Amino acid sequence: MEQYVHSKWKKLIQPGMVHGSLYYDDEIFKEEVEKIWFRTWVYVGHVSEVPNVNDFVTKSIGPMPVLMVRDRNGEIQLLLNRCPHRGNAVCVQEKGNRARFTCPYHSWTFSNSGELMNYAFPEGYEGTDKSKLGLSKVPRIAIYRGFVFGSMAQEGPTLEEHLGGARRTIDQLCDNSPTGEIEISAGFLRHRTRANWKFILENECDGYHPGFVHSSIFSVSDSAIGSLYGNDAVAVTRSFGNGHTEVDPRPEFRRRGEPLSWFGTTTERLPEYTRQMKEAYGEERAREIMIDGSPHVMIFPNLFIAEIQIFVIQPVSANESIQHSTAIQFKGAPDINRRLRQQTMGSVGPAGFLLADDTEMYERNQRGLEIRDPEYLYLKRGEHRERRDEDGFLIGHSTDDLPSREIWRHYLSIMEAE
Amino acid sequence: MAAEAEVIDGPDILKEWVGKGRVFSKTFNPELYHEVQQFVFREARLQDIHDYDAWEELWSDDAIYWVPANGTDTDPERDMSLIYDNRSRISLRIRQLKTGRRHSQTPPSQLARVVSNFELIESDNNDIKVMCNAQIFETNLRGDTMWASRNEYSLRRINGELKMAYKKVVLINNNKPIYTLSFLV
Ligand code: FES
Ligand SMILES: [Fe+2]
Image 1 (cartoon, each protein chain N blue to C red):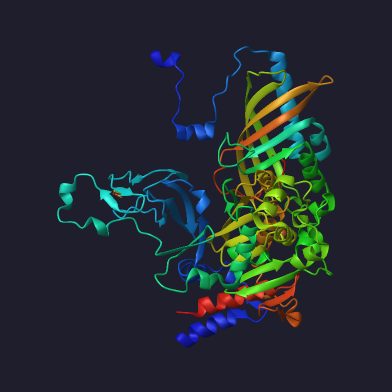
Image 2 (cartoon, each protein chain N blue to C red; image 1 turned 90 degrees about the horizontal axis):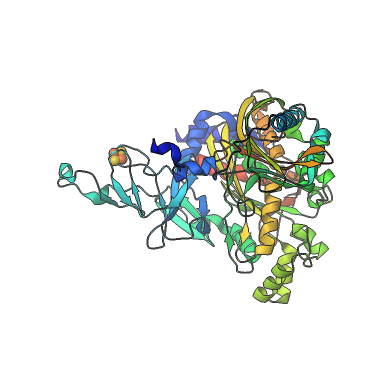
């Protein structure tokens, strides 16, 4: 049996080749839910989404909704919104502020850290141990610089081990804030997508497509993004292992040597932000940070930090996904924050100048797989020019399929495990 | 009955969707009503047939085109919106569509919309304020999609012609995941 399972995945995922069924097969999707979404670390939300005691917001782990709560002690909790009695939802609001959740069906009441406080007509439950009937929780929760992750597995690697080298990218993002903290406070756009979640995952660090998929907007605006993904680009793709990948444009930005060029602006146009950065980090370090800019990293399986916005990828079924997107806000930096929101609103979401067309591609890919020949997708671009950087991470040209190959390598290792 | 005289506030949860109270005009000016309707019908037709230039012409120079997300009266200066375009971004949107390489509109969505339930609302300046509902049938490569919205306009008479200074489109399902929306709504 072991042998069979082993060979099944090895057959579907070969070096630089992946089988189409990985994107449309319902059984494979169910197995992914168990082995990826309900086992590994999954990004859930950011602490700033629940700034006050008793705040809650509905998030998800895979297809399953999760309540992210700041309980009455200020601790972040990840509760499962299923009444232990007969399964009703204890909360149908998207977000709000509540110390208690009362199930509408038979009025069981829970504290916002999950304990069952009381039920209606308690005489009927004589001798019952209430402490066993609280709301279930996501077994493991860990927070890295405000980013809250959950794992449905009782045991496994720590979040820091899971993130590995990709931690640098989250640090790099936070460094761009003069307070060292970011906020997710503008609400999410939710983009329904009739395509498998992995098409989205693989596209995030695909530097091969922007020049074509986004040529319409590049040609009518003075965007400098195009030059990062051309044939002569010096930007690289990198794999951190564990399925985390990035497009690293810093070589290009360092060549330009202009602070805030990454954001298509200048220090003169953001004087207050620039002043705050210098005050926080000192002249030299502030300049370095503002030249390097914010990262473009896909944290497996669902958190995409795209310089100025985040995307959270949610799988719904083999053929359907949701992209949740919002602007990143740098805590305490209002002048850059407005631009971050404006630029994000223009680019992403169902009507975005960029994402409407990316999503069109995902959906066409998905329909394309109904054609069963060829059986495999071809991901070999740049295989011959993969190399290691000084930290030992695999890197390639910004237009290479290296991120996809590395995502699939990690995927294979997860799916092969029992 | 007492209830008739009172303004009955709905529960907060409803207000999020219906939006703040508005004062609907009780006086009926048939000529203005007709003119406003004809203008909005024309706008709808230009959107349906993707006549981008003619549609862009309808806007005033200081226009705002707003499609909020997650509610009706959100704060576009704080909260994410599906579209929050000033005049220059409206024109960028049009220029992108006109390249012919806006893939989500290549081929363009086939559209027919019905606009109805026109009501004029009290205005505190010279703009004419109108609310109406719209339903749009879209078919494209993905399939068929129905859209429904509550729309609000500020129209302004400039050199004798009506122009749109403000258009707000509140999609009824804007708190849910929605498909790509790259035609002019
Ligand atoms: S289902 Fe919740 S109290 Fe009965
Ligand atoms: Fe893209």
